[in-house]
Image 1: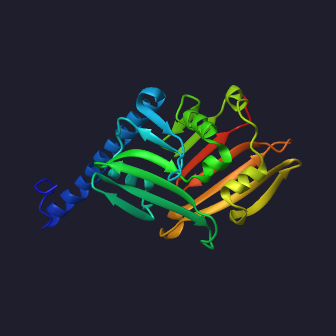
Image 2: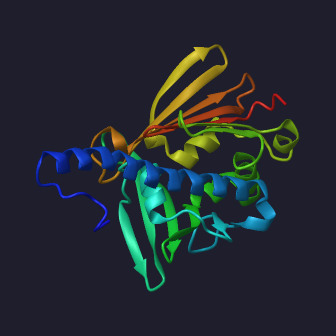
Image 3: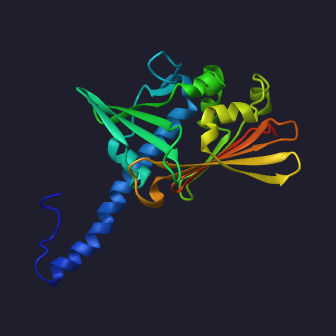
Length: 251
């Protein structure tokens, strides 16, 4: 950056600096957006560019990028100020660990997300092992493929992601029920239950990223069930991003 910015001394220097900063910021943002779209293109050719990794005794399931494009700077830009709870450094990279705890008490069972970087590029995204224990690796693999596939609508401007899982994919697995969801997220993390209409309750789970002040660290899950008690809709809010999984099999 040295040698590019004008001399800040004097009024013209200050005006030039004020005018140039948005251009530099927009350039950095454009790089991140281009990396995101390149990664999105990789998702559409899943078998060539990505590999699902089942859980092991040491780690939960994860998604590995065979040709990483997202840098640590890109992830920080998307995270909008939400920093990892802890960082484990290795000779060739580092692992960012995000621990979400019940809000506002910050107690109970944490929801953990891990990002593995190698030489500054995002190589793997993983979650803790209890997701495999309650959902099964095969179902998780299916949901990931649906989430990054053509059935998902992505709007970067509004920060909204909507995935409608096809009926033929859902039929491969037994329906998810309230007990399974509560075991996954923890009974102690169930903040409240809302009765939308008869036979269709909605469960609200609220979390906050450990170590992140204010609303930037907020995360919430909403789970709706159909008349037969099967999970039909999952909504999630992570800071400024909104995610939705439609499991009603409408297609």
